[in-house]
Length: 177
Image (cartoon, rainbow, N blue to C red; front, side, top):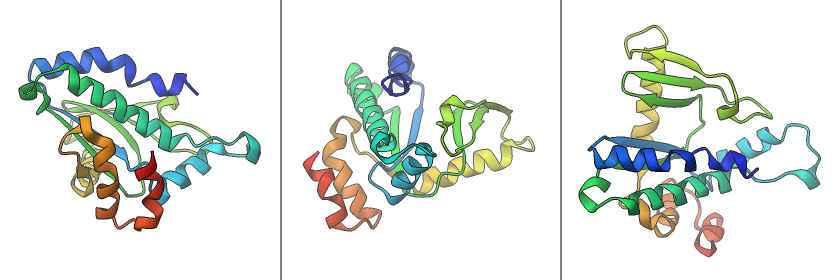
C-alpha cells in the first residue's frame, strides 16, 4: 500500500522545478469523502474478504494533497499561483495524465488501480481519441472545486464538501481528521 501512495511523491522535485519556471500545473482528483470515492474503494477490493479491505481512495487522495501542499510550500507565492488543484464529485470515467497536447489514458477497472494499468498515449486534442478525452478532462475540471490555497487544504475540505451537496453529518469525519 505504501508504494501506491508514493507515485506523486517521486514527482515532487520535478513539479516544484516546473512551478519555478512558470509552468502551469493543474491537478484534478476525486473528492475523498464522496460516495463515489467509497464506491471506487469497494471496486478496488474486488473479491477480498471484508477483514482485509482497506480504504485506498480517501487516504490516497489525502496523501496526494499533503504532497501538493508540501510542493506549494517549496516555492514562493508568485510561483505557487501556477499550481491549481481541484477536486470533483462525479463518476470518474477515465484516468488521464496530460502534458501539453499529449494525454496518457487508463481505465478504472474493478480490483485494479488505474495507475497500474496499461496507459494509452493520446497525441493531440484534435485526434480521434483526443477530442473526447480532453473534453472529458475539461468537463471534470469545470465541475470541480478549486482550493484557494492547497497549503490549507484540510480547512477547505469540509466547506468544499458542503458546496458539493454532501450533508454536514456525512462530513463530520472530515472536520475531525
